[in-house]
Image (cartoon, rainbow, N blue to C red; front, side, top):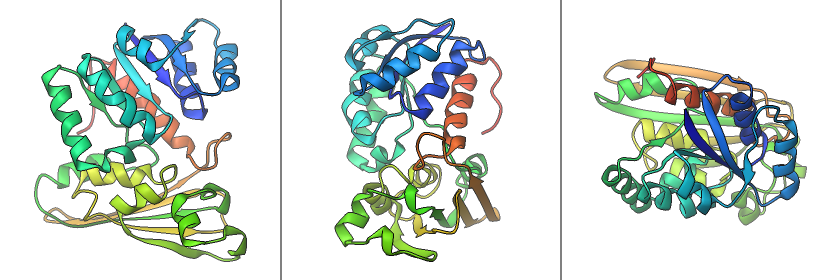
Length: 271
């Protein structure tokens, strides 16, 4: 039974802890961390059979087999390398942090040298298995179109920088078009799916991204299109936002739990 630490006690972190607490995942929650004591205490109150401690990520790195990051890109940049150096596995939800090629290469080499693993759930998108398989041959194009309600894009650095006022948007409006590398910086809490797709396929610079602010919808909708030697693939996912955070999809939390189940299972399914 692996010992895990959870960084971030929002909706995703809570769902992971509840899955372990219910016995659905054979693991032990050693510790939890969040800058908000209120969020951390809320997680503790909802657990019935687990008694994790509130502790720093540094203590988790010294004590756990697996650390699950569901907080922010900053948390990835701060704790992923120390965890890998200590031989601790890490599951990363804020995948946009990996768009920096130097950081990615250093993390990969450090993890390999210390026999640790970096796990990246598919998140709020489907089709990653097919994309990874297709990428074994040649891929000619990969694009992601993300359509989100206004509340799901509030506070995005790109919109603030460009002076785009979401309150002025009354109909579906294209607010960003560019590479995944630009998207994950400009929308760090919104487009982790683009980062995951980039890592599965042709990289951050070549993956095309369009982001549409749509006041007429309540779902987070992602459309993936891939072309290559294998043929063509198109997939549309209409995600319900998580109850606590409209910037994140419920499927992202389910994906994290599913990945944890896969890590702890003797049988592995999928690419």
